[in-house]
Length: 132
Image (cartoon, rainbow, N blue to C red):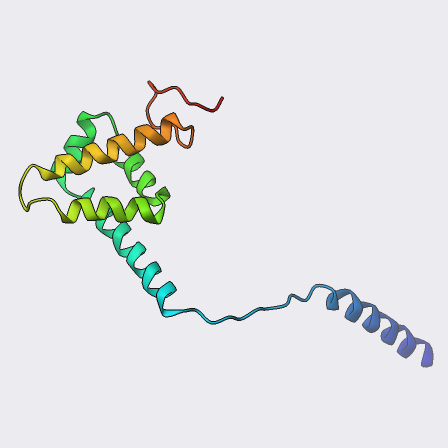
């Protein structure tokens, strides 16, 4: 009778020591209001730029430049916060209903072109990357 209890105790202790090594520590820290506002603003900028790609005239211009809408959406998702803010500001400063959206599309085209040349993306087949 003692032998099965001893065996159970040994197995329990081994299991406890094995699983005790898998525990993870958690860290908590305060999040400042500025960090929350910055993150929210960055998300709003990305949403504004993404919403611009839903317009038919924007999609037509992208197609004229040889950029698929899916590639453009992927590039918007990969933009840094500063790039998204710059493009959203450019969209905000455009005149309503005017040809200003073409300026934003040209800006996006140049941004994609620069990232291709720097070797960060490969959207355009006619570019040569600086990194080989």
